[in-house]
Amino acid sequence: MKKAILLTPVLSLLLVACGDKAQDAPVTEEKLSEYKAIGTEPGWAVEIKEGEIIYSSMEATNDFTLPVQRMTKTATGWEVKGFSDQHNITLTITSGTECSDGMSDRVYADTVRTAVSGTGYLDGCGGEILSGPDTP
Image (cartoon, rainbow, N blue to C red; front, side, top):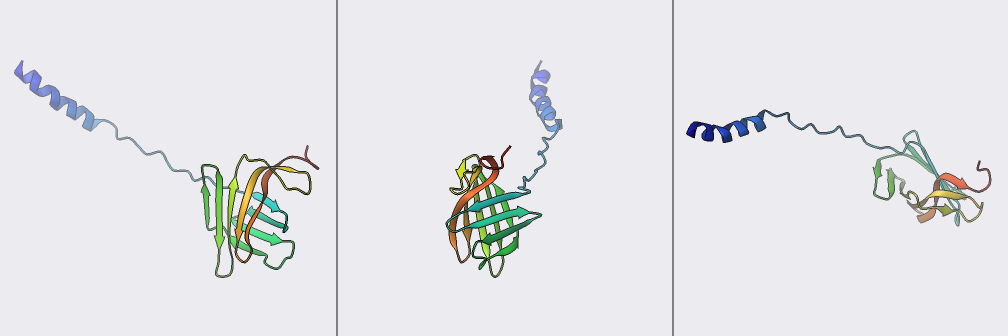
């Protein structure tokens, strides 16, 4: 009987040690493939496509195209950054917070705040057009 009692803890340890090692799930990084945002007062537009951020303004004095350096999925949406020696831009996209551009009567799915070098913070709208002119 003593042998059975002594072997029980040893067998338990062996079973645990021989069990399959838990495998980590592969990490898949989400990407924002294409995205458009606009703002008024002053007028500006941003387009994200093919790994680039394209910024343009109504004045066309500070327009630029930068590669996307960082793209992070956040609890509330996305943060996208691009920078170079001359320009930098950060887009903070709040998904699911409807936004009206104030001029076209369009309502967009997201609210966007853009920090642009030489311009400061610009607020606007982006993503899918939910209602307004030219919507199905």
